[in-house]
Length: 484
Image 1 (cartoon, rainbow, N blue to C red):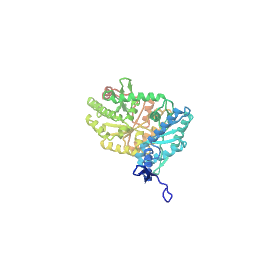
Image 2 (cartoon, one colour; image 1 turned 90 degrees about the horizontal axis):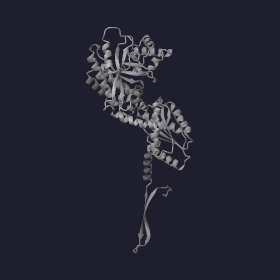
Image 3 (cartoon, helix red, strand yellow; image 1 turned 45 degrees about the vertical axis):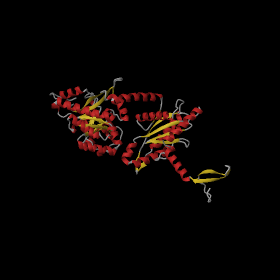
């Protein structure tokens, strides 16, 4: 204690004073003020256990608390707890549109809402990025944990005010309840993460409770991932081609390249069975590069084999990961150059959801593609995103009407009017319109009536092998009517 009464932390070293015979007759004491060192140590410890953006416990701190909870379950059979793994949906879009400062602000606001959704004894932590975890102490069972998950979803449903704008940021949640077989914190976090990804696959903005089937699915997924990594080297991918036709005449306007995986141990897999995995693992980039090269090569082969058909247009779907790849434009140029095609022969189809997720970066990339001369079509137009406001800002050349509107044109008058409005809007903006999923003659007649000139679907042709696509082009060079 100092003379003024202030208490300080000190370290003391004491040395004895000895007489000639070696007996202690006193001592010398050196006292050092270590107050600032202790403060620095405490700050360092806090920095090691707290997230600097939200001031929540970080991954290391949460894993330690989770390990303590698991240890308690081994001592007390009545003690149960739950874990929620929370991942923000479309967080990248906020960073891209409003900047990283706004993204950090969103994380802080999300942290506050998460804390307000649980009890004081529960733990809310930020693992990193846009991932949060919640440890729910002393729960009665799964219904209580599910109730908290719903409360979290409700709390995040209200818009956030960032940079003077209202921003909506839902979340996908994985739910795990403590069980005797869990021994390590990482095992429980892994299962919560698996459940969260299943929630995203269900459509986001929801929660999913982990079950054993998910572990089996994850193991099977792991095996499929290993096979997918070898599929290109084994030459297991094939392309089919579905014609896009002039609706009135049935003449081929272009071909859309469709990917199939001829899996040696399973069967022929359709895109929806393996492309999400390819997207998650990043393998979609190398697969997409192969598709671009093969599609351009076939287009050139047909052009050489059927000279009268003129330039053959080819359409290729491009994923979010490919759009984000800085090598995309170079890969496109290389595919066209290797095949000897002009850029006008290639069209890229990009899902409406992908373009809307990163608006500014999408517009910048589309402008680069337009400079190269490659067309871009918005796929699945009207499938759920409010893109009408932004459509004039996109440097597009065409839109594809989502098949759900085409299918319902006969049953619901409003869907017919929606298609008519899309066609009118596209004409005003100078865009071509392609109707997807045309399967009946009645749908074809309605599309003609609203002025839609191009379509694809089983009414005209299913996906064709490359040789069948060439034969179709050759057949259309023969005289005679070709209308569907």
